Image (cartoon, rainbow, N blue to C red):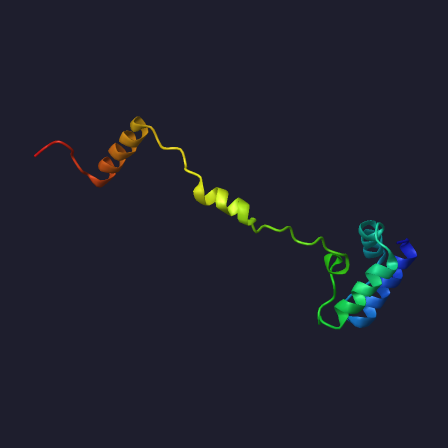
Length: 112
């Protein structure tokens, strides 16, 4: 997108939203952010945006977003987690933690 196209885009936003003010600094900064995008793509995103929002768009509203990564594990990954056996703590570690718990709880061991 060239700077003139960025200016045209901002003018259109100002037409749709009275509170949106266009100035040279805004043109420069928006152009810096949008210069890697095509005017047609961003303009189409603007037209889609304005019919749904009563507030002016931010840059992120007008550029194509990356699809979210699939964070759901596959069946194979799930099975690996279900059947894996965590390593057991050594007897020394178990005794140390039990001693800490007894101390916190005020339990004195061996007296009776």
